[in-house]
Image (cartoon, rainbow, N blue to C red):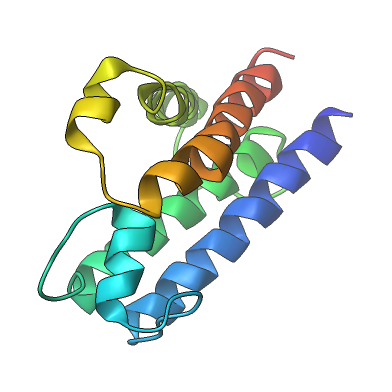
Amino acid sequence: MIFTLAALVFIILFVISLIHIYWGFGGVWPARDGLALSRMVIGVETTSPPPGFVTFVVAGMIFIAGYLPMAWLNVFPWPVSQTVLYIMMISGGLVFLLRGLVAYTPLMKKYSTVEPFTSLNKKYYSPLCLFIGVSIFVILFS
């Protein structure tokens, strides 16, 4: 069960990191252009999408977050101490939990009014973040 959960988290975050790499190279799916993508994914009105470098960094961080649970279970190699891995798992779990919870706070309602991001965030992005955050802690403490 725990392996399946870790594998699911890895697969989800691996696919999301690949999508970010695609965006870093200028792809715009599922939007029609870069500006629409920014409104859909980041929730900002902007004159240009984020630079590719920033998107690649985000892709790398998402990939590492997916890799960590598999490393914790010794499925994938981990080049540093278990203590560092433990700290990274806790940090990653907290980041995902906080990211997931923020959508349901008055703060988000005040600062995030751009559609379709606001609707997509409540329906998909935040529940997925909550699932991943809880999963990381289940894996860590099982």
